[in-house]
Length: 196
Image (cartoon, rainbow, N blue to C red; front, side):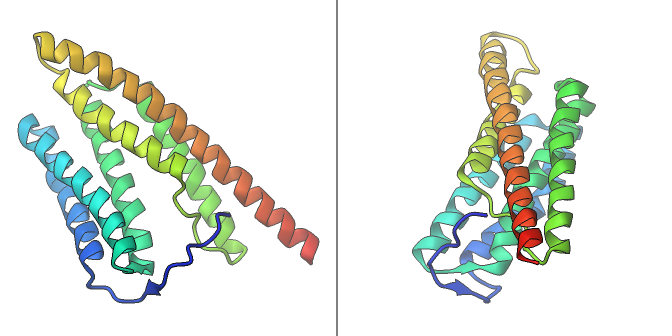
């Protein structure tokens, strides 16, 4: 597993970073409704605000020493819920092909299995690593661009080119980060087995 941060961790719930993460979570159903009802401009705005708050919650937590157990759960949960809701909405509208959605969901299922194995051995879920964050950022750029591509004109054409590029990079990095988690889990389980 990754080396734990040396910063002080707080048990406080009502911190500015946690409030930002909670606001991101509250925005997920609104975002999904906006996509499904084809209010694309508003959906893009909610997604953009989510991206800003995602950046701010981590930065402020580190700067103000407000890293918390709750924050470590909320941040990746919000990331995953935005990815899942976007996948569902864009697949429903036939902007994303089903095979891409299945590939991304299969990676999520693999991680759920790994978290279960870690829990059985008394370990917390793996920390989000740089590669996982990079994958999420690529997908968070890809999805709004692909949503913009669901139109006509040069903006839609340009959005499609960049959207698919980010989707390809994001999917590749998403799986790469997932495979690294599997390797980490395997090492921990082996270390436990040899220690017994």
